[in-house]
Amino acid sequence: MAEDKFEQAVIDKLKSEGWEYLTDYSGVTVDRLYDHWRDILNANNRKRLEDTPLSDNEFEQVKLELTKNKTPYDAQLMLAGTGGVGTQLELEIFYGDEVAGGHSRYEVVNQITFTDLAT
Image 1 (spheres, rainbow, N blue to C red):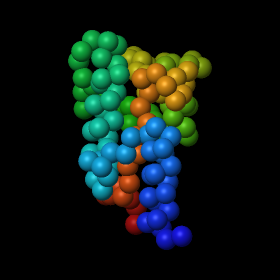
Image 2 (cartoon, rainbow, N blue to C red):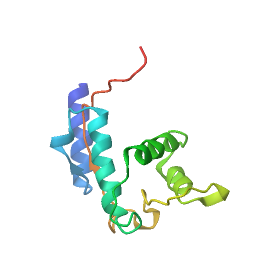
Image 3 (tube, rainbow, N blue to C red):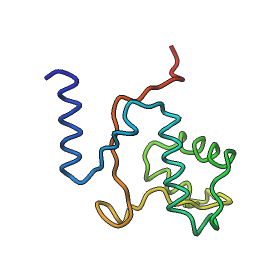
Image 4 (cartoon, rainbow, N blue to C red):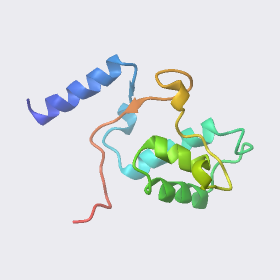
């Protein structure tokens, strides 16, 4: 199977399972995806953030901390301060008790442009 057909088959399967295919975010840069994710974090944590969106510095700290984790669940534990690792601000990024339901969002994009890969 050609790469493009495989890619489309994966997208179609995820869509059939309830994932939303974001055409507006396909073929964009990683930075644009981070902006989208930041909007989601701000919306999902509006009450915790007291209606004040994450600052650039706060969001960079979130990204930095997340690169230290291997899975989204590990990242959620880190952000929630589990295991003695505390943060000044607790954000929800993963709703483990709401898999396939609740207010979790399942989105798929393709053909992302990475501008900062080592060569």
